[in-house]
Length: 375
Image 1 (cartoon, helix red, strand yellow):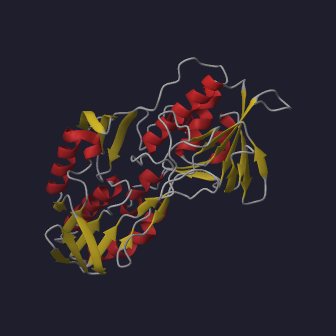
Image 2 (cartoon, helix red, strand yellow; image 1 turned 90 degrees about the vertical axis):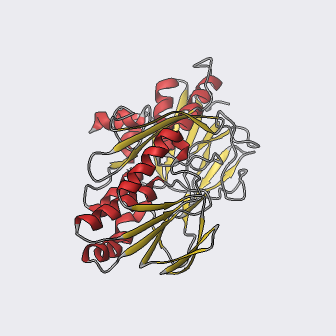
């Protein structure tokens, strides 16, 4: 189907994060003349949330970028509005502001939502990291908080920020001359095992050197703000503070297939299973990896497939997970990377040398280069 006015294939991209912006920029490179592109974003600013872990420790603010210039560079139109529902049969979306937009291809890249898992824990959401941790860190600085448990939930999440927070908090206490009993529990058999054995061993060693007790293959029940039970083993732990990651849930988009957690099922090219003409990329999908770099790779696969659909390229490639991560240490960062095939990590790396260019918390083929050039 083509737009009656332009004769071009109408692509509507919903979202304002990594996957949405990467998809728009990729389509500008792959199919600039045969598509029109509209980005519907609920946010006027793109924040690199992976960097917010450093904010409470006064290293630097996370990078903020206005969305409009990025969308303009992608040759796309921007509508600042939120999605209300999708009409797959009618090939249109309706926004919360009441706008109706017809599409030939729809790309859903709305990310996920953070859902607190524990009533008695301090839940750290990357969108408000510093305010949530301020009082806890003041207690660490003063020596009135002497023990902290960092808890990873059993549901969908991305655990790297919690490892960074535990390490940075322990180092902060040490620098202030205080002894802080720091414990981190995780359902993972080994820390950050998605990056493979070498990276996992590196993270394990770093935490040990930083004074963090790591309890793997475990689930914590938080009984009160000062007590938790860790299973298996029914180990009871009393602490001054409990810090937990939220569980990630899908945005629950009306009109499209989704699993019990609100995530959208997709194939290896990003096509939404059961919704013709609709693609999804990023944390909104039912893929288990919730990581900005992987979100951008999903967006690239979607863009290639759309470009093939309109006859611009011949051989679109399915998404391949090449994970690249940065571990913020308060000094020089450390870098993790691995290639994930069939759920297994290969070519595991843990190094002081950046594994992506340009260096940064998000490794995206088109978006990272654009932000580097715009800086």
